[in-house]
Image 1 (cartoon, protein in one colour):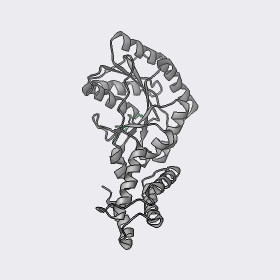
Image 2 (spheres, protein in one colour; image 1 turned 60 degrees about the vertical axis):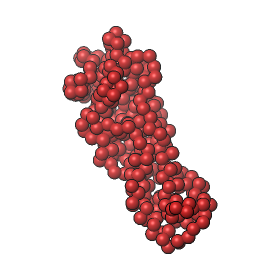
Image 3 (cartoon, protein in one colour; image 1 turned 135 degrees about the vertical axis):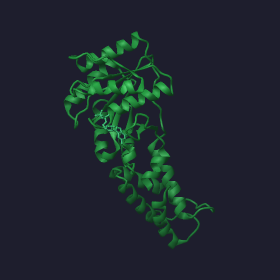
Length: 295
Ligand code: GDP
């Protein structure tokens, strides 16, 4: 899994061929390579710096186990720390009286509507939940229709479209319907914009205040790398998110956005979108992402 970095570190440690405790010099040489690998994976620079400092503290003076080379030992320390920083995989929180509101937020094109349907399908098939989806996007004419089509494909109910309602009114109607018709979960797919703007944030905040969501999931495109981190910071500061769904992980071999977002917002990565198909949804496994980052 770590051929890239292992190869590079192997070259360094082959020259040393030393046993015993890891010296400052050994660790520094290895960490230079780790730093490059992480920057190549598009991890944000401040996150890389913190990581390297923390690993240095852990590694220097550590006994090298008999069964491994110093290079392998450093890789293990790096890998374990990375997994720890990425955080445990966490499931969607449904811990509230039904209907549990889940708010989906993010920029336009991030995969929000697709992800709403993916999560709804998983809740329906895996967790046997009765799910209602509602599109609050009154700006893009096709948005509500798009969710309806996804509902038909997945067999998940969607809130009937009533033209002329604003997002807060639609959200309230969704919650009322959820209560009246005995739904377990109500998924609210908010409108996105091409970039962050105050109006978008105010709209999302108004929906949040009207529905008190248990989860506010930010949907972010892994391919946008460090931009995704800026988006996450903004949404977290202005609306408050409870977790992140990272999409297009199928197209991003690097995985750096996951670590940066987790570190900078402190919020867990909950789910990964790994394709356009409606079942292309995975739980978050920190060790897999660590493998991608280290290369
Ligand atoms: P929204 O504007 O945020 O609601 O984005 P959409 O849900 O309409 O998705 C935009 C495009 O991204 C669509 O073509 C989706 O099929 C595609 N998409 C969404 N999630 C993924 C993913 O995880 N992987 C890939 N490859 N494509 C995705």
